[in-house]
Image 1 (cartoon, rainbow, N blue to C red):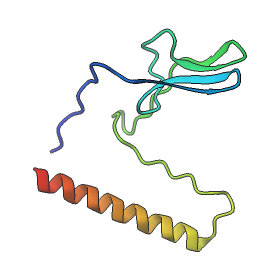
Image 2 (cartoon, rainbow, N blue to C red; image 1 turned 90 degrees about the vertical axis):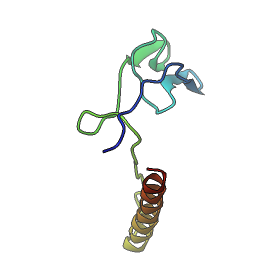
Image 3 (cartoon, one colour; image 1 turned 135 degrees about the vertical axis):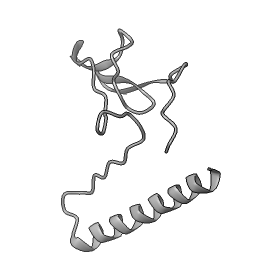
Image 4 (cartoon, rainbow, N blue to C red; image 1 turned 180 degrees about the horizontal axis):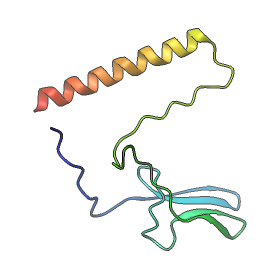
Length: 98
C-alpha cells in the first residue's frame, strides 16, 4: 500500500503574471486558500480564492492531457502510448524502491 502524502511544511508559492491578470498558487497549481494572497486575480479583483484538484478526495500527482482541438486519431494514439510508457516506467521505479 502506498505511503500517505505528507504535508509540505515549507510550501513553494508560485505567481504567474500576464498584465494585470495573475494567479498565486502552490507548486501543484492548487490555490489552497491558506494564504490571504492566494487566488486568481484580474484587474484588482479576486475571482477565485480556492481551487484544489483531488481525485476521490485525495490530493496527489495527477496527469492532465490537453491535446490540441484539431488532433487526429493517430495523434491521440501516440499520446496514449507515450503516457502508458511513462506510467509503466514510474511504477517500475516505485516497485524497485519498495
